[in-house]
Image (cartoon, rainbow, N blue to C red; front, side, top):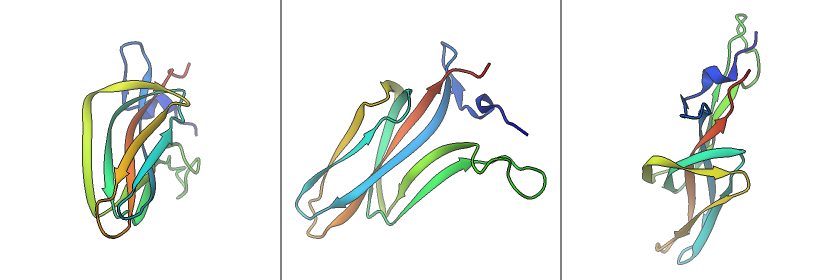
Amino acid sequence: MRIRQDALANNTTRDGKLLYAKVTGVKDLVESGTTKTLTLTIPFTFCLFNGAEVVEDVHETINFYVKVPDGQGGFVDSMTEQYGYDVNMGSKIYKREGSYGAKLQAGLVLTCDVTNHDTVDHVMGVNFFLHELRDPEV
């Protein structure tokens, strides 16, 4: 059994491209009184970027997948589509979303400078809200 990838798209653009939500997280230790730049290199040929959330005291990360049942208690593929990559979970979150996306291409680097004004070190993370653009399957 094979599922069409375009069936998993979240939306379609005016030019017919399919959009796939791809929340992607990065994290690092930010020492007390310092600033650390967290970066993400765009892994998709093209994507829209419309927001981010900064997460304090990251202890866990999660991944989101879509899997297709095989009818026998298992799955056709181990993963059909992934929607969240190392999404950071933490005790405090600041979230900002735009009403439209900025179109980015593979190789560009998103950065977020995080300054720790506390007297203790914190593991800080950023979850970038990306929407991969793909051509429909033929």
